[in-house]
Length: 549
Image 1 (cartoon, rainbow, N blue to C red):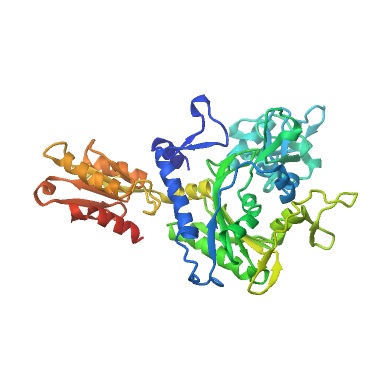
Image 2 (cartoon, one colour):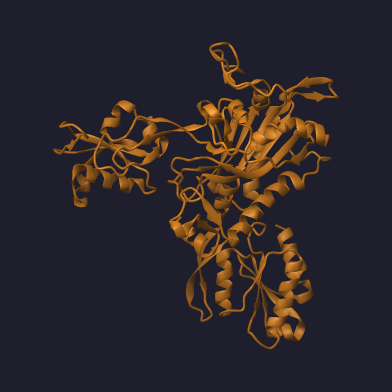
């Protein structure tokens, strides 16, 4: 993972936000190549989900034909939206503070394990009592070594005594530990036990102010998800677009979550981009559509080059399901920063039932004593958070009935998908240089549709008309709308390796033969095969190869 992060900065994929001022944790900037790569990810998603969709033909395995449309909604919405959606009351993580280090942690991201050192004790914070065993903690990626270092520090021992540490139980996370045991916990980076506060809720929505007065009445929130912008516009879309069930509304855009401990490069950030579909269908057909979308979205990643060995489709257990969910499946990827056998979420496909439309119509919903969703009431019997009062039902003019549609939500992270494609593409091998000596080659094996640069053009030397002919070929590729680079600096082998490292699938070289027969060499990044083609055929050849994958 360190090599991938270093390459991202060196080649202009991803930079730390505000780096010259020390950086801003949880925020990232995309460089020239990263911008192209992420745009290609978005475009591929939009093309697959919306632009290329033929509403006259039912796709294979789909229950029926359907329509797809798009919206683009504001980052800031009416505060009542978040009260009815449940985000205002429920969208939180449990956090703890360390009184010694003045640090704040998300409870479920602290690794912990109990340890003792035979014959040794540690002093408990603020008392004369001692402890014969403590629970050491870590938030580091290399947590096993960090736990050992923390244990030695707690007992005041040097590294040479590491083999005398006696570990008890398996590594766990602090959210599974009773608060009563916190007196024995040594917080990450702390020197003594018992410095953690009791866990408390931390709302993840980012607060802002609308208007000049700055009172509590002017408070608003940056959206934590794009979905609610779709739900509150459901009636507008139905009335203005002549769409009929089943249909989907898509949105691509930024969302914001005030993560307590953003981590793992761009995987968990405070500002991120989502690619979401809210698919509306008849309640009696929703189970079939749920299966269709979970399978189709899984296949999308495979089609763009993600290895099936590193991608899983995992159904949520009953205790994992959100309060609104009828069923949820996560598409997960084996990121390099995770432990062996662990996977991180790329996309969730949720069967949301009619929860969202009903909430925005009637008021915030919650499960009652019978386990059914109903409007949550205050002690006075009035809705805790009132809905819009607008009729958000759908009238089926064929069946002559009115009902609330059910919703299937495939929700993908553009940043996480981009990171997964970067991790999947990274590859090292050995290739001979100009003198035949084997050298390590780093190559980003992006699917050609995702590659930020589609082709590179090289004049073999800077004379004999080769730069002029190369500029002609470069101009033709640019005019065809292809992202390409021109490079005439250095030996041809070095230029190839530079393009391999950014994932360019095709390199085109203008050489002495070009000036004689008007042909060029096109080199394939992965097979290293080189073929001669006519200058007039370069654009058709490159676009043909891109279109065939």
